[in-house]
Length: 388
Image (cartoon, rainbow, N blue to C red; front, side):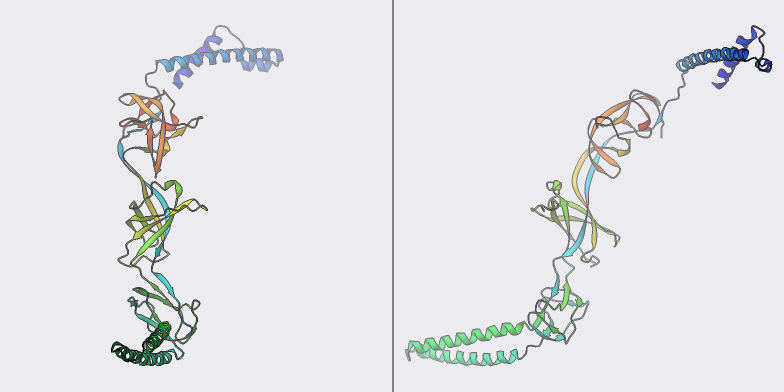
């Protein structure tokens, strides 16, 4: 092409200058006549303008006659329906309903601690004991009195059954026995508070108060007991997902610190929306056979809130938007070997997952879509398709 332009330019210059023996530019300049120089420049300017116009006409003619055009190069792919699972990604914290700090129920000196950290204990097992301050002796004395009252009542009852004695004597003996027994039982319940027992089976995670310390109910933390069998994850879900995130929904749980993941299900979905942040709580059961999952461990959750078995998915990177806010892509029509026509198609999209997005309207299965080069073509433009 450049060679053609050069030949034409030389030919036009020769044609314009060869007909008459005009003075050369150098000789005119050497004469030093300003008017002559200006006249020569005006002549050359006119000739240059004429040459430019002729070159433009030649370029148009070449473009119309050239069968090997420089078309935009694009790649394409066919869109097919596929299974699409959308996941709501959240973060949660591992908890257990059996993670308890044990406090004493009675004030006194902590006489014995029968367990150590890391020890597995059973429900009801004795963990510690507190000085009863002579309460056991009082219980023993009251029990003796209760036993005596019981014997007196039983004898009086036998006499009353034989119609011996008065009814008032019988009732007095019965009242005395019941009163003594209740007093003894009440003191026994107080005495029971001097022993600390496991509220459930688990592991002693921490012994906080040492033996010999003075403890106070509701203030002195004795130890922590944890059961890692019934673990779960709590998280807050935006209210817009209240109809999609329900009980028994599948959840992919990832623990970044442990480098492990597992499949789980939602076992409880809250019915109360928090007015402060417009969320509701969900609870996800977590199996913990190897006991590697600990309370307060951070977890990443992927909750399957939407599934379409026949979804049309395309890359988000090929979507453009016009001045009206409409989304569009380019498809190819009239495909002839490796050449085709680009056509703009308005689409409506749905949920995204990673790099792909679901197309809800404007696209049909089997259509060939422009991928690479999608942002460099125009509606109705011819394109050349690169084959993979």
